[in-house]
Image 1 (tube, rainbow, N blue to C red):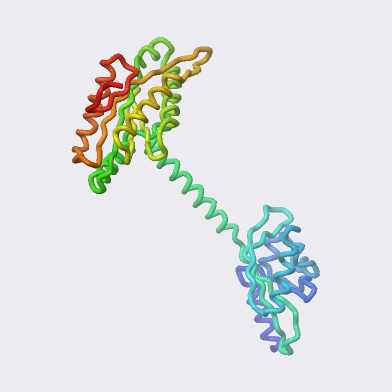
Image 2 (image 1 turned 180 degrees about the vertical axis):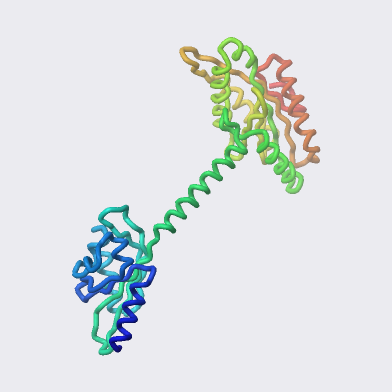
Length: 310
């Protein structure tokens, strides 16, 4: 290589966007370009003579030495993720490429180290993850009740239509249950709306714990909840309803220095694989009728449509 070619090569390296340094066989830095000096907060020529590994955290030194040795032996690019440690700034994530340099005699053990600053990419990924998280939160807000944390009516309506369609297509059984708190107005009137909100939250948690993993509970409105039970026979749906009622009856809800109790009337309507699936609104109407039967029978009852009162 002529002197002019060498000068052009150095100018090209200095103009590169990546940080570049040329390493001696003992891994000391022979020269660097301006970009590496900028990234490490060093002045012109200050890095010459330093051990290359010293630019990185100590826990990466052994890995770097192994990578450098392998690059020299195999003569091909090694790729390694590292973190530069500037004196005055936060660590900089870099993509490190190690390229063995062979002189015309083929005896050199020098290595070019080329480092791409990934800070902007890292920040972009963090921003992307933040936006994904925010989108997940917004999606959750769109389908959950902010007071109770269970699903809202909008999500229930969507899932209900979906499960009804599945029941028709695959001849699956399914059930829906309305759960209405008994005498909830008296709780609000006697203890205040803040106490009523606490009761609603605790009821929602109790209902959720009483369900199968495939069931969903949603707040339908006011003090009324609705439960969707896919792929269940009538007796299974009734068992879930009884479990919910008993769990609520046993529950004591602490409000300031008092303990409150909230019972519920539950109306269930189900579809069996052996019978035609009714229209969407018809199944909800049956569950609603069962709920009113439970209320008329004295409350704190479970009624399955077409069956005697529990």
